[in-house]
Length: 88
Image 1: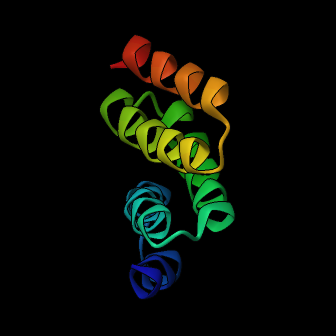
Image 2: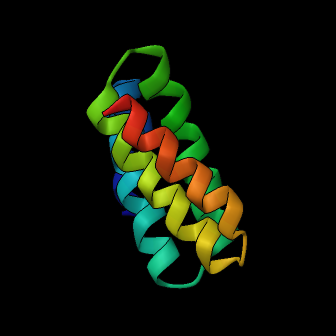
Image 3: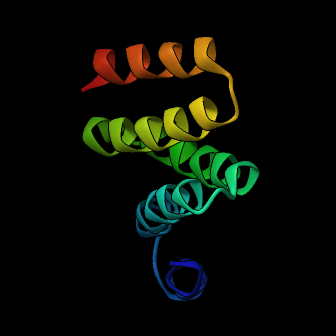
C-alpha cells in the first residue's frame, strides 16, 4: 500500500491518495505501526470530510479507531466510532 500511495501522489488526485491512505492505515494498524496509521488516517479524513465523501470518511474513521484502541486510547477510539456512525 505504501507504493500505491506514492504512485497516487504522483499521478492521481486527492481522493485516490486518500483512498489508498485509508487502506495503508488499516494495514499499518494490523502490523502494529500505530503512529503511522494515525498519520495516514489524518490525511484521508481531511480529504473525505472536505469533499463530503461520507462512506469513505467512515472507513477512515474506523481505521483510526482501530489504531487508537491498540494504543490503549479506548475513550478516543469509542468517540471515533461514534463519529463514524454519525457520518455514514
